[in-house]
Length: 72
Image (tube, rainbow, N blue to C red; front, side):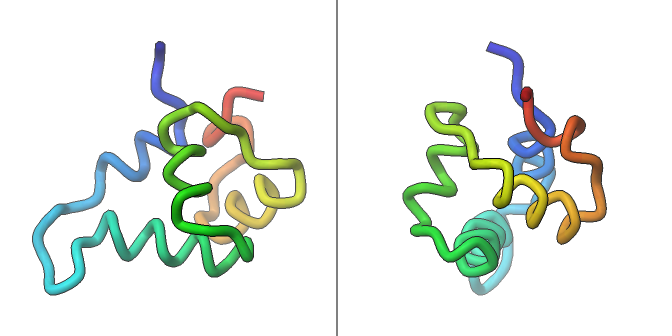
């Protein structure tokens, strides 16, 4: 399964910091979308897909096109 742009962005984050950047990213997106961290991790794993509203919020926040982030 090819990784989507959202997962690629996550994978590009460093793993070294007081709070790991990847954990901080998951928390940030969860807070931004009013979702649980578990839900965001499911989006990253590709087992779930965020709804249109969440995709728009995430794409604006990351300043990337929705099509670049998600396979929809």
